[in-house]
Amino acid sequence: AETHYHQFIVGAMPVTRLCRTHNIISVNGQFPGPTITVRNGDSLVVRVLNRAQYNVTIHWHGIRQMRTPWADGPEYVTQCPIQPGATYTYRFKIENQEGTLWWHAHSRWLRATVYGALIILPKPGSSFPFSKPMLDVNIMIGEWWNRNVLDVMRQALFTGAAPNVSDAYTINGQPGDLYRCSRQGTFKVSVTPGETVLLRVINAALNQELFFTVANHRLTVVGNDAAYAKPFTTRVIMVGPGQTTNVLLTADQRPGRYYMAARAYQTAQNAGFDNTTTTAILEYRNSRTRSSTRAVFPTLPSFNDTATVTAFTRQMRSNPAFGKVPTSVDENLFFTVGLGFFNCPPGPRCQGPNNTRFSASMNNVSFVLPRRTSLLQAYYNKIPGVFTTDFPPVPPVQFDYTGNVSRALWQPRRGTKLYKIKFGSRVQIVLQDTAIGTTEDHPIHLHGYHFFVVAQGFGNFNPRTDTGKFNLVDPPVRNTINVPIGGWSVIRFIADNPGVWLMHCHIDSHLTWGLGMAFVVENGNGKSQSVEPPPADLPPC
Ligand code: C2O
Image (cartoon, rainbow, N blue to C red; front, top):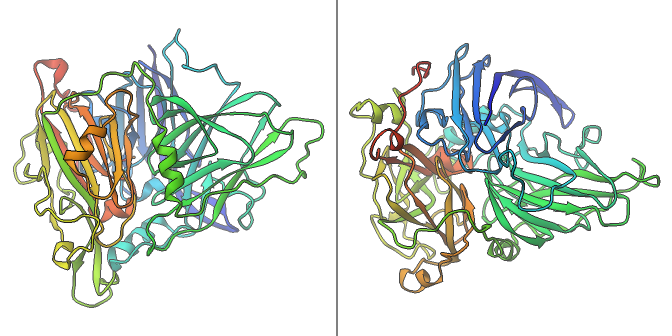
C-alpha cells in the first residue's frame, strides 16, 4: 500500500461561464478541482491551505474514515473550519472500498465550486469484476450560479424562501453547447469504434437530482458509490446529489457524434427548478466524423418521471462478497425526513408560503450546528452544553406521513440532538418521507459508513407487511440513499466505526434548513475499536 501526498490550496479564481466572469472559490486554480486517484488499502495525506477569504473544510464523501473521524470534514461536526490563512492536514486510510467517490467543501454552500473526484482503484494485483475498459472518464455534474453562491444561500436563509435556482448545470465544470457562450468548452470524450469506456458519473449538484443519458447508447451499471454492483443495462440513470454511478458504455453505434446529457429529476410539483440541460459530446474517432458533424440528441425522461426512476432503482443489486447484511437488528430506528415551516411575523424574513420560513427536520428536530466547538471535540473532550443525546428513535407524533398533514405538525423544534449507539450494534433505519410542505425525494447521506439498502417503497412504511419484502441477500451498498417522493427507504449497517457521524439530506438547501442529525458511535474494546486521538493541527474555532 502506498501513501499519497497532496496539497490543496483553496482560493478565489475568475471563471467565465454563460458569457460572464466572476470569482469562484476552487482548489489549486482548477475547476472542478484535482482528481485524486488511489488504490484500495492506500493512505492519503492532504494538506489544505486556505487562501480564500472564507472559512472552509474538505469532506471526503463516502470514505469510511475508520477510527479517524477527525479527517471527515463537516464543519462544526468533526472539526472547526479552517480559517483564512490557516492550514489543516487530513490523514486517512482507504479500507475495503473501491469505486467512485468525491471530495467537496463541507462549509455552508462552498461545495458548489469546491469539489473533485476521488477514484479508488482495486488493490495491486486485483482487478475490476468486469473486463478492464479502454478508457476511464469522470463525468462530474454540477450546478452553476452567475452569483456568489454564499449570497444565494444567504438569500434563502434570510428571506426564509426557497433559494434561487441555478443558472446552468455543468459536466466537468462546463455547461455545454445548449447554453449561451458555452460551445468552446464543451466536454468531449473521444472513442475508437468498438471500445468500451467506464463513465464515472458523480452528482456534485447542490440542490438537484439528475437524469443522465447518452444518445443511442446503452449504459451498463457496474457500481454505485464505492461498491460494485451486479451489472444491468439501462438507457438512463438517475443520480442524487452525493451519489455516484459507474457505467460501461461500448462504442457500438454508427461512427459519429452523440450527446451525453443531464437534466433535473424534480419531484416536487410546487417548487421552482432549473429546467435546462447540460451536455457533453461522445465523439467517434473516425475519418468521417468531423467536429462539424451534427451530434445526435438523446431522449430524456420528463422532469417528474418517477416511474423511470423506480424501474431503474429496483434493478440495483450489490455484487456478492461485499459482506453480510445483518439479518436481525439491535437498533430499530424510524426517522421522518421532510420540510416544514417556522411561523414568523410577516416581513422580509418570512417569504415562505403563508408568511412562514422554510425549515426542515428529521423526527421533527430541525438540526442546528454548534458554533464554539465541533460535536466530535465536545464528545471526545466531554465538553458539556454543546449537544444532547436525546434524538428521538421514532417520531414524537405518529401520523399519516403521506396524507394531508395538519398544520400543527408543520413546526419542528430546533435542536442539536444526537443519537447514541453502542459499538458493534446492528442498526436499521427506516427513512420516511413526509408530505409536510412539499413532497419530494431526499438523498440522505450518512458519514463514516456505507450501508445496505434493504428496501424502498411508496406510501407509509408498514412494519408488518413491508419487512417481509426486505432484500437480505444482495441489496445495493451506498453512502447516500434516495428517500423516494411520498415513500420510504430502509437501510442497515453495523456500527463498527466509532465517532460522531452526520446524517443529512444532500440537498444543501434542505440541510441549511435543518434536515440532518448526528450519531455518536461509542468506542468498543481496545485501540482497534476506538477513535484515534485528535491530530495536533486540528483547527481551533
Ligand atoms: Cu457529501 Cu455531508 O456530505
